[in-house]
Image (cartoon, rainbow, N blue to C red; front, side, top):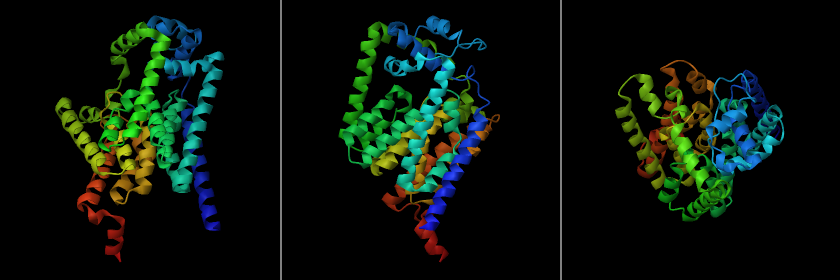
Length: 383
């Protein structure tokens, strides 16, 4: 017991040191340069009750200009009306105070996720999760992806509590960022988890209905037109994305042809895993696969992969899958993504390797493929 306590304290201390390190690096970010002004702008419009004009570019620019006077171009609020309504309290205070509350909220959510990982997998999981720098850097940059990580963790917790409808409903809350949920309904269908799918669809209906109630059909039409007009701005650096499309851009080949081949490979892996694997494998595959094929996936979006990485690192039986999951959590892929081409494709390659290794594990369990790569087989050979 003293050994376990000592190990837990060391892992928690390591997590605190790593978090402080990433927070120190994040201190170079400025409020004017980050994305939080977009959320604050949406919250300010929602607080006024002017939901029909929520996605009016000129109105957003007028509100944001005095908030970030040194910023040459505004950053726009691109989420639906219901999300702006949830953020409205942040506009009750000046933007700099609001940003502090924003950071504290996401820090609290991240700590809760770590606590769940500690209870579920032990203190090693906390140290492994803390190795990943993009989570803390994301909310310091003003993004909200840690909130969606919290949604995923809560949903998985409810799944393990045998609450399928509520699990699916909570998972459906992440549909506010639908492009990061593309393959989750596919996984639910292939797994025949109809009650979870019903909960997810119920959440989607609630979110759409709430947005229509707030902004009306005019607001919905304005939102769709706004998204269509801002498509180019959503991918300013496509070579730095987390998807397969970035790989072709980095290696300088026919990006369209290579991307098509990689998309088919990703979908094949996801379908194979969901068809025969357990839910934790299918859930992990759906999240990773979505990041790989979605059009706008940034480095901070890879924070969502913390949950799949922990599930694979502590539940997979094959060494390749566990090794790739651990490699993903290290800061090396993130730091290489900040370099120049072709190194910017490294995070996407690691995600692709993680998905392939998970598919290999499911195939090994089903057909005996890759038996030599399992821990027990390697131990037997060594002995």
